[in-house]
Length: 137
Image 1: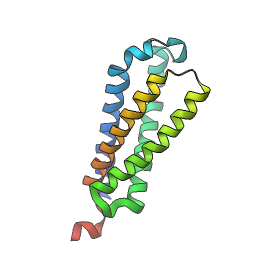
Image 2: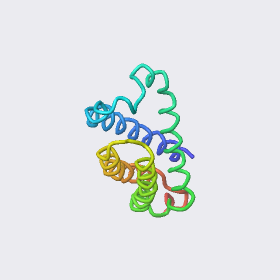
Image 3: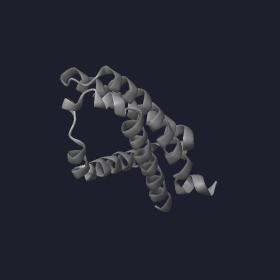
């Protein structure tokens, strides 16, 4: 349980920082080109807790899936799970693109950065969380 919690904390910190770097710094100018699609800064700040909760749910689900079937494979299995999770996320982004006027650049950059993000999350989780049988050997 201790390693599960440590893996959650480490993966959450990474996802939080990655999200800030990507959306708050690197893609800031692209978001600024379409202000009509996004909430105002003050409105986003008042709803920031939803970002924290959403990211926590993503990490929790990732770790629970990893622990329920991937844990014996270590870092490689974590990376494989990360790629699979991101493929699902790319599919969702494509659906959003079809029904919302989101710039194609954001879908592309979000998908490429998402693959990198989830590979790193998988590696973090795979390196930290090991089931009791794997730690004993």
